[in-house]
Image 1 (cartoon, one colour):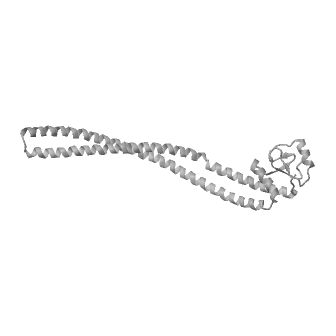
Image 2: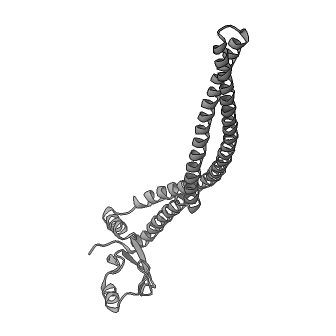
Image 3: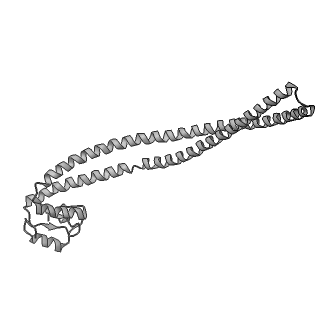
Length: 245
């Protein structure tokens, strides 16, 4: 059976307290990183950005349609100007001038139709742009809320990290003061069960929270004060004090 002076065993509780603090800080950091507000906002932002893509694509498509319509109107207007100049010149055969007049009438109707389409597209583009701008506002609002919460979480994480570093320094210094064999037993239990040492108080293991059986307590009473006894349930070192039994 491994041995350690009772005072050394008692000091293991100080080491366990530091390890418990480190674990508590790690859990705190995990909770901060998984803040449900961030999860909800990230999900909301993804939806809002997807909707924004739809709105901006709609506006861009409408803008392209409008550009094509404007080009068509410009081309018809150019042909009208050219044909009017030929008609006004009076040159050419009579039948050609009559045909030119009919073409001008057709072009005028075509321009009127294209201008109606152009106007409709301009109105549609105005609506698309307004919807895209409104959706951009939604994205900006969510992103702003995310930034505020992220800053708050980051500030708290920085505090947790600084505190953890201080505790780790204390833990490292304290661990170095133990006999290597004793520390190895403690570390093995800590790694396997999450608890390296716990107090045995009034027959109850504070590592497992369980009352030890009469048989286990009888075995512990037979052990020497410098014997290391282990918790049958938690697998950690049981530190006996004057009130252990």
